[in-house]
Image 1: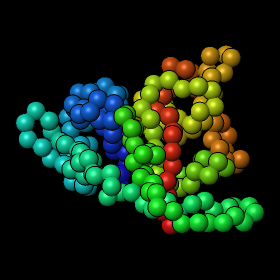
Image 2 (image 1 turned 90 degrees about the vertical axis):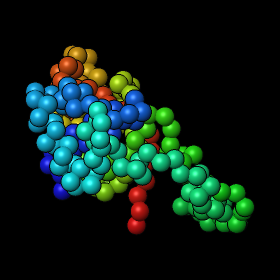
Image 3 (image 1 turned 120 degrees about the vertical axis):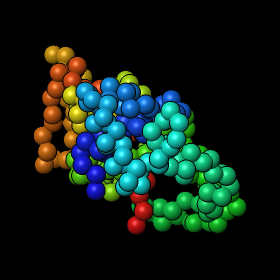
Length: 201
């Protein structure tokens, strides 16, 4: 299991990779994470390589994304048969069809990446521990959107965002047992907006 800092480094790498199309340098990671020394970032990257999250590389880059993340899979191989609709209320006829649904058509897109949810702060809107959320990379969000927010350049969190009249930002958990978190606007950086979710059983 990764430490909080190692997970932050991995999240930054995934975000910048999705945004730019290439892996960030150690200096870029240091800047985004608020780490002062390049050597400290290098140590975290080496741990991520050892744990299998990244791969070693030669040349100017100290690492590379795993090959699975760089490979464009044929869309046809991922398509599943779409056989109709099923009611969650009154029964309706479920009639087989011949069309297909490709998960890539629903979730993929430029600047998108996936994060695994850890924790229960969003369970009231059906985002559970262990779910995978699809994030659209962006630096701005509207009131009420579910975003990935980097707080004080230290910790990324998935919360609903609200811009308060006094200039502060509220990061609102969707869990009735948890209280909202209020931060100065300059302490919160939006890294992306949630656009989808998937889970396996």
